[in-house]
Image (tube, rainbow, N blue to C red):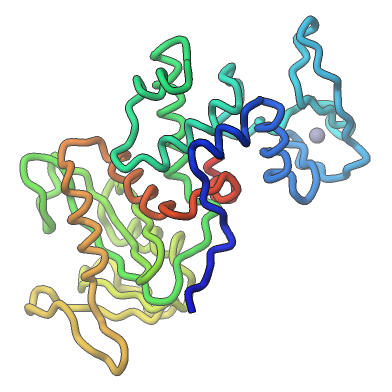
Length: 293
Ligand SMILES: [Zn+2]
């Protein structure tokens, strides 16, 4: 039986209808980010009796959704601490921009964003585009990968692409693929044991089955993971262990996808992976949960 995702897919028409005003977009953000009650972003106070709303008044420059915290005597709105903070772009345009960026197969140019969202200046559209892409890379609140996870690293870009020691002029990228599940990818300043292990610990649940090649950088994870290695140097690419297959074929498949557009910036490639994860289950609630919003 096919398990239905509880997350609702959204079309562009639906999202534009749902967030046709700023008030609706703000109410939605509040319901997601403050689902367990308001939290003051300045002092982290959660005591609901300490907050009160201040009525919007454009003449006095009092913005909609403003709250006062009695605990620290500061004012805030739901956008404080998010990528929307200090932005004059209407909130509903931000939400639609997320949709456009996450759902477009080939990414979307800032110029197109400017035109679709009727944004006055190109620089503003570019700024939105950068902020959203930056936020898309933040997986702090994403659930960790589990089950069987394949990890590998490679160099992308430059004159030639490939794996091995030739990282000069290329972008080192590490990826982790949960079999039948999501992908996490990360640009690494340096590929070394400390960075590789840190990325695994940040993204893969302890106790998961971890499949890698025999790169020295993955050594030392045996106590936290069921670590299996394939010895590429010895010509081994997969082997059966009972019902399980030890291989890194899935993660290598993802690298092949990344290499298709060899000249794009690294974050564009990462975004591609994110879009793949989002495919078919795009929801503003998910974006919020992942701290993308
Ligand atoms: Zn406070």
